[in-house]
Length: 189
Image (cartoon, rainbow, N blue to C red; front, side, top):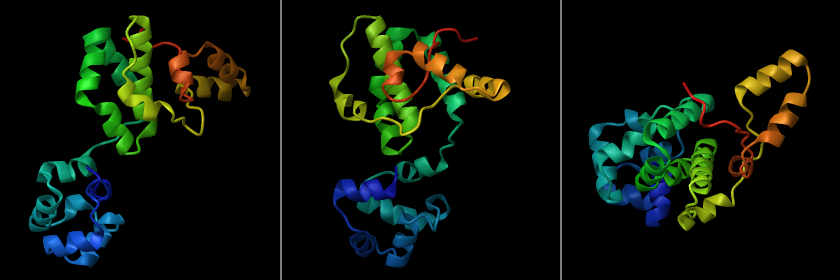
């Protein structure tokens, strides 16, 4: 969990966190501003912060320890999960895990929006209603269009943007809504 989000959610200032936890204000400030990595803090510091914030030590450092794969790798993992679980179980698993919201809070917007687009697409394919819990996120759109690496490579090889234009036309609407070009989610090996 991002410490700044925790402070915001709990309506606690950095100064108040420092006072309540006994951790020096400069340390709290350095952690919040990214000058000190939370995963490198002393266990005592982490414990004091976690008690005041009401989260476990693990929750406090888990986000910092999380590896962010490339977007292409992430998309592939999601498509494989759909294939392995099946549409309905994938949708249920995604909603129960609250992964969409977690990624969005981390500001991992491409991953969050891709996952939401996948759930929305699979819901449409299976005549299921959309989960209204994510309507706030559905209003979001990536500022730049995310094309598959294969399309970008083809454009570079041909020295032409024609593959981009064609892929945009063929893209699945649920993905296009977020400026993500995706046309094939079922054909994975």
